[in-house]
Length: 414
Image (cartoon, rainbow, N blue to C red; front, side):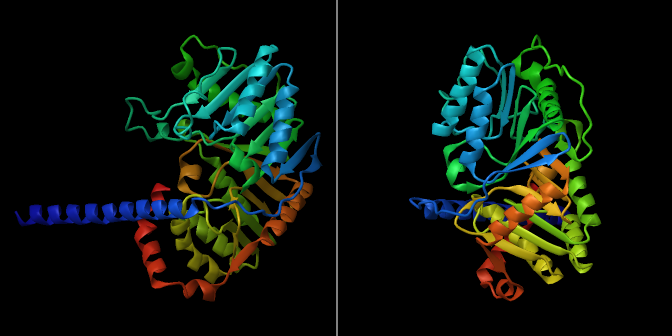
């Protein structure tokens, strides 16, 4: 009886602690949402699109949504054979309607149009907007993807990717979702590719489509076939997280590059909630003299993620890592550059959901020209950031330290 009472007491304590954590997280989110109401967006510095040659192709980097959307819509309007469009969030606003209209027009003139969007991410989007003509092949990745296999963790990942491929001639990939706010109010990073890398981006889309087409579109739905052979471009590679196949190479890609760093590691991330091994890799790099810098939002659109992320700041600052917090806008980019040679741009954040949960894709580029562009962008972003010092961080209020401590156990969930 004593043991049973003890177990009951432990269960009640754990439930109370977990309940308090959840209640605190909800309260923080509600307060933050109230504070944001009526606030007008502020201008922030951006870098104009920059194009560099890598092998037989080109890479163009975008840091302002309207620049990107203009080129994406132009590519869709110029399509002759095929469009592959995939996004996590597809808002039913002015920008979202522009993309929908352009895709429908393309289908009407005989272009094959394939679309994928995530059902959970678009729950608040009007059902009217999510109705498409039969001329478009649309795969809505379901809110509940596990079906009856609720125990199978491989089936819980969200489709967090953002891809556009047109006629195997041009491809786009990066952090931008589709919506009016992202066009002018968010600081994100996307790239446009031409050359052999486009085929690899098409293969990434086709693999996801074919993995899900029968259950979502019907067993008679034909696979999306690849009509051309890939040309190897060793300086451009794509890392794809595929939870259904238990494949998570993006984390390994990052760690391998960090371990090899000798000069600098400059990382920009919207949500930075790494595991301890990742933190240790950055600390070790700083200890051997590498210039390690991390740029994150001063205030992101997910206040709970901000609080949990801050739990790592003491370790990083003590180790010599410099932390910059971007002000006046939400920085949503997922980019890094190392040693003036290695770079990555993609959809994966450094958190559990991205590195060990969701469908993600990052392009890895080994080229000095691309690294120079991302370093220029980082310096521009740094000029609009507040550097966090160790003394400033250690002097924060007691209630902030308490909140970080209480929310710390939620890290594995994010």
